[in-house]
Length: 202
Length: 202
Image 1: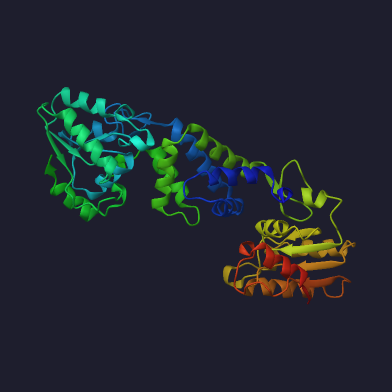
Image 2: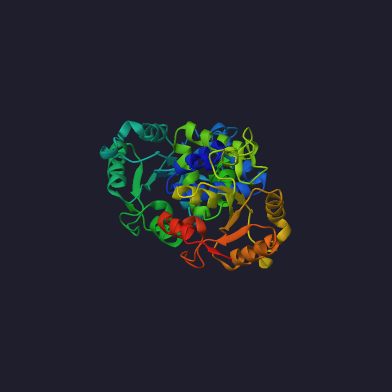
């Protein structure tokens, strides 16, 4: 059976199989699709994958993903945006979800996860110290916590609230219009806009 | 909104979106998964994609995919296999499906598609001339046509039967144990084995 497929093909099937949600069947479909498709398609995918890690970095201000020649990132560098307000999110994709509503014009802080004792993710694995430093540096009036409406997101929100207590900053959280147990990036823009508008003080 | 994602990230999302069955949502999930995953994962995928086209070629005998340093392919070069019998399939994945049954020890011929006027695929787009040449070169006693049990597969089978008529070769087809309208590569091995055993003369 292994005779039937040359090594470069099995290698790509194996590589695809390591992606989440892609089983061996889908992996071989994708591989054989690319074999038939124009060279340009697999080349552009190969180049984009190579550039993903080499040409991106984390913004040294908000820790969102940015290209290596733009640090601080485009949002942090944008003077038209309100730098007195920060939305704190778990992941870069969450920034995207909020930007998509078009109803927020402040800045961000990306934690890169949420506190989760089960997964061994503690306070020091997240960009919480960095958030506290930003607040202590001054100029920020409101922190809107937009962690996922899950157990981990709630724990993280409470921990951040404690850390910022007495630092002269208003700490709010997105309104509980969010479906509990859901994932922020899948929320539709209308619901997310309402959750932004109806945010409550912690 | 475009501000929120740097170019190397959007480029990869776009490249993933061009794959069949992968929409923009899945494409961005995969991309952000790779951003968090170890560098080695995106690198191995990138390298495998680059090698897919540069290190593979079509076997000059059966037109199956083979690595560039093995032509004729491993199956064609295998003297232990019966070279008096050829199974004719539409795609390289179909070779794999038949190899998986373990019940066929002859050789193959890959057409690279089936006749389909709707899709503009004609006789000259397939490796049919090459099949006729192999038969005319002699030594082949039986051609087992294993095109998909679809309208296009049936048309292709009949055309091949006509082309080989009077050339002193027995032309058979996989038994109609195959689910009509299905796709050969998804058939389970037991059904496929039975279809091989119960093949009927055209």
